[in-house]
Image (tube, rainbow, N blue to C red; front, side, top):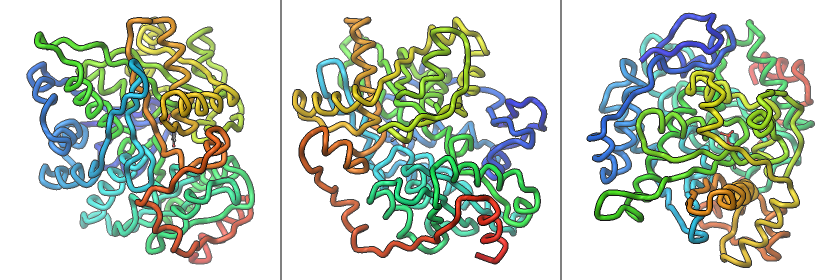
Length: 442
Ligand SMILES: *Cc1c(COP(=O)(O)O)cnc(C)c1O
């Protein structure tokens, strides 16, 4: 499989180069030269095969020529080594819980897959240089990346996070790993962290010295494995609803969206033959795409801070990939995708209401999706939807506990974090300070 740049001004590369470099030299995002098409017989088989085999078969065409089958099987089995349960909340809204991974975030899948791919590539004799993964986080990405890359040889990870602006569990997930993971506690906002990272990628000398790469969803190795959620959801959907004639209701997906990597992966899965229904992008007040669908005007804005902060994105980086899947055809876009914008008041009241009425605790991102699903269902009374629950509510205790009026129990799987020591390096919120720290040999 070859990947081309959506900037249309860089040479094609294989999966290995796309994963190692993250972005094309022309700053475009990489996109696969062909979208694999599964046959009806393959899709039928996918209904019942085990998750690891399914993951291997879905990912195989994308890495073709760069990772051998035995290694890819191992990478896939490790990547998806936890549960993805589909849990009914109401009769027509089911929650696909993507927070059962090691850092309680859906980003675990992408981070684990990418880290293992880079680890595999760094074993190659040609690559005798350490790769440095640089990532800015508002909370969730950093933990998943730290955990995913921990102990991976040939890769160092540097995480920049805004001091005092991530939740206690998130901070522990970032700062207690040690080994090849370094956390920089920046005296500033998430935007400051992101600005430093962007400047670092543009600094030729720094890139040459440290082999910098990005671990956000622009990287194909993090973006593409997110398709797997949709395959796992569909297996459970079919098992639950398929009748004797093989029919089942359309599986409409409501995806809490920020950079639109996750929902775009779902649309890839559909383009490759997985029989999915309609897509609904659930957004917070950052509604560039919601407005684009309504007006056909794409207006980038400054990000607005909300309670679903992992979706505070003013210019979603993966939206160009959605347009590429749909061949830049606006009617095809509005046919495939709807979008609703949910404000913070509605998000919080949804958490409270669903807890009271349905005894289900949503996190703020899942709550945005639930509220969007309700709007969609009001317009499509016969439909059913799946919302993606992208994070565990315990990662957002302030908002959720206030809404439900109770403490959230800390899952046993993260309790151990509280016995660990936080280790972070304070950093002033400017690129010069960062570059200085890098140059001084850290
Ligand atoms: C990253 C994130 C999102 C947004 O995902 P995108 O792929 O950027 O659209 C939603 N919810 C949570 C909890 C996240 O961490």
